[in-house]
Length: 344
Image (cartoon, rainbow, N blue to C red; front, side):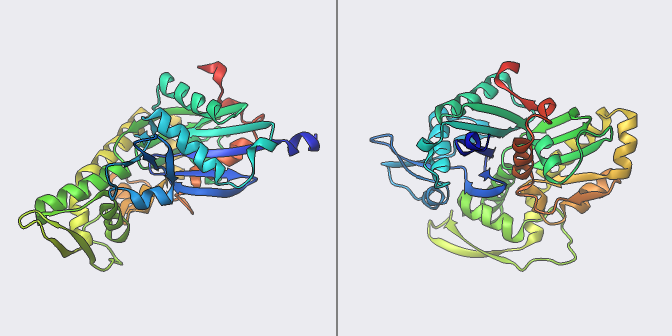
C-alpha cells in the first residue's frame, strides 16, 4: 500500500475568484492570486499567480491578464486550465513520475450542474484520475474544526472574492443555504466607484484592493481605527496623477449597501432554518470565514443585526482550503459530503 501511496499525488484545491490555494501532505504549498497573463499572439501563458498580478492593469496590447473565475465559477475555461496547470507545476514535484493524481476541489454552494462539469473537465485536463468536489461552507466548517457529522446546527458565513456563501450545516449536509454574488470583488468595485464619484479620481482594481485591506471597514465608528491611507490615482478633471488621503469612515460609507446585502442574505438563511436547528444556532452563534471576514467591524455589525454572537475563524483566508485538505484525507469517511462525477 505504501508503494501505491508513493505513486499517488493528493491535492486539495480551493479554487477561489481572488486566490487559489493548494494543500499537499497537510501543508499549504500554493497560495497565489487567481490570475494568468497570456500572450495574445501565441495564446501561450506567460505568468500565473503573483507574477501575473503584478502585470494586471499594466499590460500593453500583446499581453492580456485574465481572471478565469468569476463569482466563484469558471468563466474562461481555457484560462482556468492554464492557471490550474501553472499552479500545480509550482508545487515543484514532477508530475510525470506520478501515475495517479487525486483531487478535492472546493466549489460555491449555488453552482449549477454545467458549472460542476466545467470543474471536473478542468481537473481531467491536468491528469487527475480521481476528482471530488466539496461545497465551500462545508469545507469552511471542517476547516474551523466543527464536527459536521453531529446532529447540531452550525451556521457558516464564507465571504470570498466572488460569492458570499451562507449555510446551515447538520448531519453531514447543508440544510439551507444562501449564495449571493456580493463579496470581496463587489466591495472593491464599490470603493473604485466611490473614489470616482466623491473625489474625481480614477483608481484601478489593485489600488482599490489595497484601500480595502488598509482602511476597509463595515462600521463608521471603530475602537481601534486605522490611519488614513494615501491613494494615488488619475484626476478626472485634469488627467494628471495625484494623491489624496482616505479615511476608514469614507470606506465604511462606500461599502454600506453591499454589506447590507450580505446582512439581508444572512437573515433570509435564518428565516429558512428549521426551529430545532435555530435553537442550536442561538447557542453556537455564527461563524465568519473567507477574506471578507477580515473587514474591520463586520462581525460587530452582523452581531448587532442578528442579535447573535459572531465568531471570526482563526485564519479565515485558509479555513476553506484546510477543510478541503481534511476532506481529502478522509474521503471514505466523508463520502456523504463529497460530490463525484457519477452524481451529476
